[in-house]
Amino acid sequence: MPLTLHHMGLSQSERIIWLAEELGLDYQYVHHKRDPIFAPKSLKDLHPAGTAPVMEDDSSPVTGSKVVLGESGAICDYLIAVHGNGRLAPTPKDGATYTHFLEWYHFANGSFQPTFLRIMMTRGADPSSPVVVSTMAKLDQHLTMINVRLAETGAYLAGEDLTAADIMILFSLTTMRGFIPVEYDTEKHKHLLAYLKRVSERPAYQKAMKICEGEEFEPLIGAKVELCSIMRKPTL
Ligand SMILES: N[C@@H](CCC(=O)N[C@@H](CS)C(=O)NCC(=O)O)C(=O)O
Image (cartoon, rainbow, N blue to C red; front, side, top):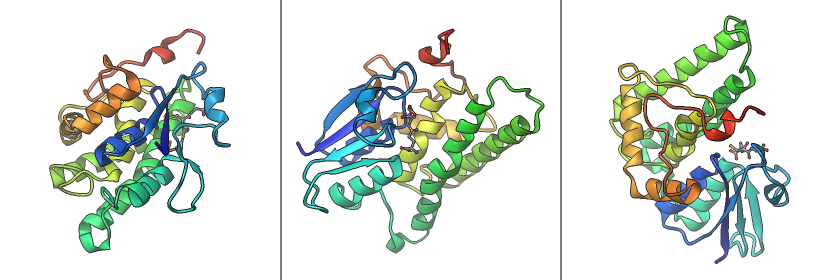
């Protein structure tokens, strides 16, 4: 099996397993355990970024040799273009769906996930400090943008169908909340909550989350969430 997909528990690499399941790809799965919350040596040995996800393609049709990629967006683009026949990535011939796709696909890791990282970095800071106030205002703005867009489509970010934009953003809207317990408002964020339920009913998403986090794992799709166990350890 030439494709190997590396996932680290409760991390952004769930995107890649979900994408592979949506595309019906044949791949070998490798699970890496956090050490204790950071990437273990097994992952650092694979790629200089030392983060999850990592993809290995032993005999890439593009280069004729082995390709190793880190960075979720790059892996998504590669898998879709090289092994996925372009599925889940609208193109200019799809009209407005394409322009929406482009914006949300890049918003996911370019703006939205960094907002969560900013919140993480300001944990414990004075809630009235300008940096915390502006970060929380940014989160509120982003959640409103997402909710408004989902009210427009009634389905997915780019339009009627799931695209890689949804696959890129979902980690931040769900599993990331195990690290930063952001709550959603059942009225203000109702379209967002309906979207999370919609996604969670997709067989490929369900299968991917079981592969990544085990049979018992419940995706964090509700309005309220709790910190994941690794964040509850008193040493952290
Ligand atoms: N922008 C990168 C971020 C990758 C990243 O930071 N992954 C985290 C998991 S969510 C990680 O591996 N953290 C462990 C560490 O930095 O030691 C991507 O999307 O692939």
